[in-house]
Image (cartoon, rainbow, N blue to C red; front, side):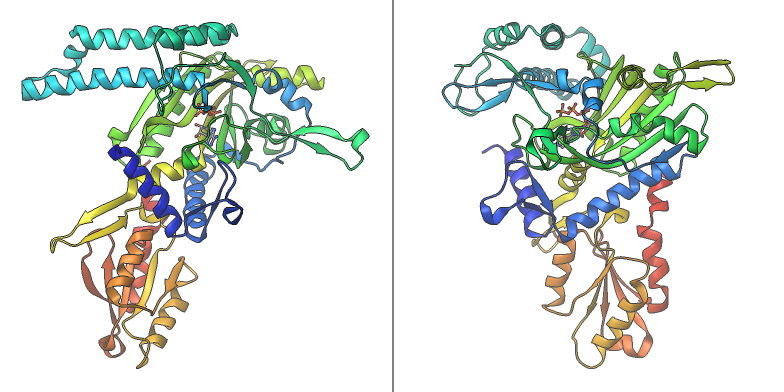
Length: 513
Ligand code: ATP
C-alpha cells in the first residue's frame, strides 16, 4: 500500500478514536459522505470559524457578517444559474461499476504529468547541487516543457468541451489518453453525462400545492439576496463586504475522501462588492490576503499553491484556487472568484427589483461587481488536522502521537492533572479548574498514570498539562508541561492564567496575518 494511503488512514482513525469525527448514523452502517463532529471536533471547528470570523469580519471595518436561511425562494437558484448549470460531468466504468467525475479523471492525469515534471527537476537539482538554477531549468528542459505543454493542452481542450457541452469529446479525450479506472485498470467507460448536484425538497404540507425547494449548494446566494438590506442598514459605501458561515449541500457524484468531499458541509464565504472596472485589482488583493491568512497557521509555506482556472464558471471573469497538500496530494482548499455583476444582475432580472448602488464619487448608479473568497470549513479542518498529526520518536526510542495544532485552535487549552486524587491534591486541582474555566476550555483528569494522561492530551493537541503534586500544596507551584517541547517547569499557580493566555489567545495568531 502506498505510504500516502497509510497516512490518510491514520488521520481518519485518529479523528474517530479521539472524538473529532464520526461517520454519521454509524449504528446503521453510516451514510455516504456525511460525518458528525465529536466532542473535540466541534471545539476545533468552532475555533477555526472564530479565526476566520475575527480576521474577515471583526478586523475589517468594511466587512460585516450575516446568517441567512438555508431555504431560499426557488427562483434564487434559477437566477443564479444553478438549476441549469450546476452540473458535474459523470462517467461510469462498465466493469467495476464505479462512478467518476470525468473532469477529475482528466485533472488527476495532469497531476501525474506534473509529478513527472517535478521528478525531472528534483533529479537535476540533486545532480547540479548548489549551482542549480531552477527557473532556467524549468524554462529550457525539453522533458519538463513537454509534460507541461501536454497538461495545458488537455486542460484547455476539456474546458472548451465542457463549456460547449460537448460531452462526447470529453469521453474521447479520456479514451485517447488511455485513462483507466485507478482501482481496476479497466478502460471500459460509459458515455459522459451531466448530473445536477442540488438536493431538492418540498415546502408545505399538502402534496398538491407544496413548493419545490432546494437545499442551498453554496452560501453565497444568501448574501446576494440580502445585499441591499445590508448596504442600506449598515450604510457602508463601496467597496464593502458581507461574510457568512453556514451549511451547504451538494449531491456529489464521488465522495470517497473523508471530509474533503461531503454531501453536507460548511462554507465560510465573503462577497466583496466593488465598483465595475476595479474588480481585478481587488481579486489580486484578496488572493494575497487569503494566502497570508492560511500561512499564519504555520502549516508550511511549501504546502500551498495557487491554481489559476482555465475553465471559468459561468459567472466569473477570473478565478483561482488556493491548493493545499492533503495526504492525497495538492487539492483545492479555497476558491477566489471575480464573479462580475452576474449574480446581482440576474437577481434584478428575475425579481424585478433594483439592486443598484448610487456611487456619490462617480455620480452614477450601477450594479456592483463582486469578488468572492470561499473556503470549505471541513476541508480546512482536514488540512489542519492531517498536517498537525505527527508520530514522533523520542530520545529514549519510544514513540508518541502528537497533534501539534496552532494553540489558538486547540480544542482543550490545558489539562489539570493532580498526581493523585487523595491528600488534598484533587481539591487543589479543582480550585485551579474553577479559576481558569471562565477563560479557557480546560479539563480535569485524575485517572491513570501521569505518563498516559500526557499522551492522551498530546493526541488531542492540548498545548499545556498542569500537574499538581504534594509540594504544590505547600509552595503553590505546579508543573507546567509544554506539548511541543515536552519541557516541564515549575510555575506559580497564580501565573497560570497569563502564561496560558499568551500562548493560546487569538491575538498571537491574528497578529501574524
Ligand atoms: P471542487 O472542485 O473540489 O468540487 P468547487 O470548485 O466546486 O470544489 P466551490 O464551489 O468553489 O468548490 O466551493 C468553495 C469551497 O467549498 C471549496 O474550495 C471547498 O473548500 C468547499 N467545498 C466545495 N464542495 C465541497 C464538498 N463537497 N465538501 C466539502 N467542502 C466542499
